[in-house]
Length: 123
Image 1: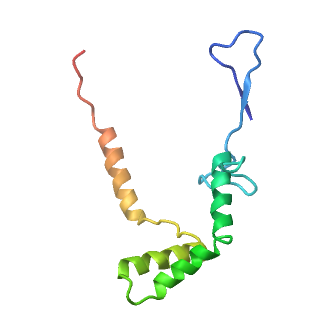
Image 2 (image 1 turned 180 degrees about the vertical axis):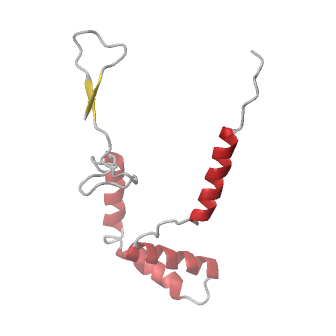
Image 3 (image 1 turned 135 degrees about the vertical axis):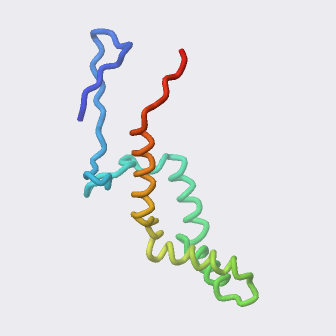
């Protein structure tokens, strides 16, 4: 935790405490920590509860997605969306990955550009 004084605070005001995110050196959350420790916003919790209550805990949503997926008369893009919906709920959304070579090339371009002398701009 870090204490931070407010710039417009009077001498009697106490500095407020700021919690730094508990992350490892790669930016991943440490076990037992979260980017949203207080949970979803109150309005969102209510919406989640309403959807859950009206769809049998989500069962109706899954049944509908299965119906679309298994219907050969449905258009292929809709069937693929249903498949994606179901797979994401079963295994979670896959993490996006990128080729490290592309990142290295882009970083090299940025580093090289910053290393070039910058022209003097008129004031």
